[in-house]
Length: 394
Image (cartoon, rainbow, N blue to C red; front, side, top):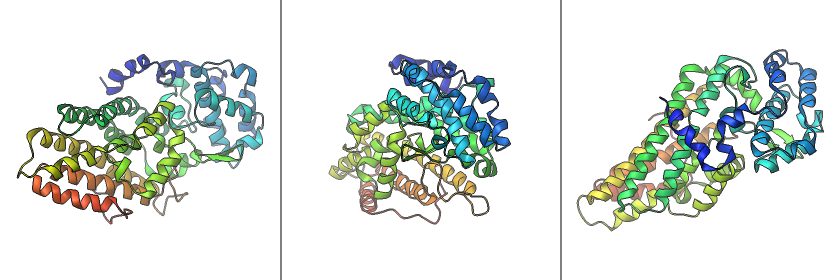
């Protein structure tokens, strides 16, 4: 049984309609099933007029849309959104081509408390499976990429619960290591996800066929990115582990822009923890007070658990960087930046930051070497992190 099967049913118990995955996937408030089944053929023919008619056909009456539940509003944005991205891929600004969609997009954004276009959640987590799956191309590789993102959602939700508990604890607390161990189990799905992508999605398919559908669109004079995988906020885990007080300006700027694409509860999570003290800094302070050769057992356990979580993040980011470097190689790339708006150099920088913090936690199990490693990590966190020549290595 997959992690999704174990965790997903409990998501609905949280009371947030955005976690009612089965209900959102089943919803079809626009009656879009038949139109979107024909979407891959329209995209294959680069048929801009047909795509324009399709979008115009699905635009609902705003008064009707205003009565929808959050679940129906999310499903409607999902189905309008995949047409928005299709039109932009073929050189057409969708709102300019179909002006009547603008008030509906703004209404759905307000109703769902999200941006006024589709996000990665609409494209993956809230997307039906089977014959009702919404895709740009209908290609099996696109379905595999969607599944790779879907598989991390339940684990990420559970990991954020562990992050909330961790933020209330100190490294000497017995629950500190336990919260980190639970986090590690849930975050393993991130590594599984990138491995699934490597196994089933070629760099050529992503770079040349799929990436153009994720371009930004103009909504009322403001550009909004397409449903990029970067919108899956692993950076919220970073926030409590190290990023809230050990980051760099480039990563901070990227996160400030990415935050708007998150779920409302995840934006609240960021607001709550952004001004806190990270787990790495708590461990740093605890180790610096120890004058013994070896750390006390509970503090050593906390350091080991923190190192395990950071090692999982490091492994994911190293593999993700390898995927990105192949997809954006000079002989393939159509764009200089990833679909989430980040250049490859930023991925290298985040990997370096993750690696430095993981090294510190690993060395902290010996008090003397730990203090030396903490000094090096603290020095590095005070300056802009440049890319390393071996950025893709583990």
